[in-house]
Length: 137
Image 1: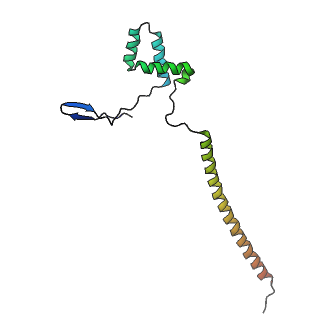
Image 2 (image 1 turned 60 degrees about the horizontal axis):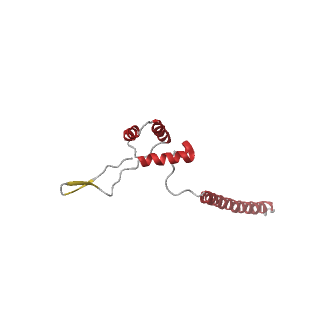
């Protein structure tokens, strides 16, 4: 998702709006590996510069890609999820809390059913006693 750069005009000079930034580019691991292989095969700095210009890359990005590749190979080039890391204990706690809520709801339903069964049983016993009494005429 790319945003349009809005501009503000000050006098005769048009400047990019500092509040609006273009979206960061995200490169796939395959693309990074392909570009690194192409750069490693290049014979001179001039060739490497041409490759980087053709792809619109900066040397700092290439450096970071090489560091990632050195740390963990092709897997190191994979994109990582941004933001805070999920804590496995917190995730498990949330799952268990949801399960507790579900089980408490089922327990409440079961208690209502047991109470209703008790009332039905009492009514049936009362009806049986009345039908067992001798009839008066």
